[in-house]
Image (cartoon, rainbow, N blue to C red):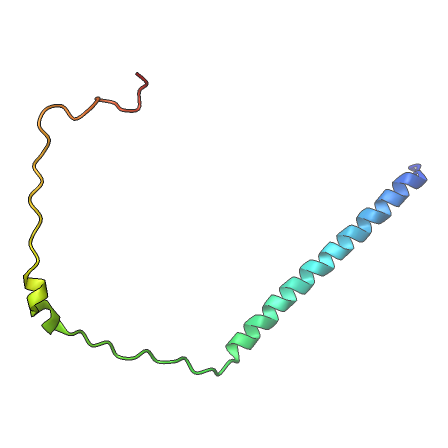
Length: 90
C-alpha cells in the first residue's frame, strides 16, 4: 500500500479539480459551436442579389484614351550586369 502525504493529496485534489473544470469547459465550447451550426442551418434569411454589371465599351473609343502614347521599348543591358552570385560576401 502506498503512503500518500497530505501535500501530495492536496496536489492531487487540485489537479483533479483543474482537469474537471477543463473537461467541462471543452464540453461547453463544443456545445455552443453545435448550437451555432443548428441556428445557421435553420436560418431563413434572404441573401441580397447583386445588381447586374454593365460594361460601357464606348469608353475605349474615347479621345482621351486615343491620346495616350505607348512607352518606349526597354533595351537590354549591355556588358556585365553584376556579380555571378550576389549572395556571396565580398
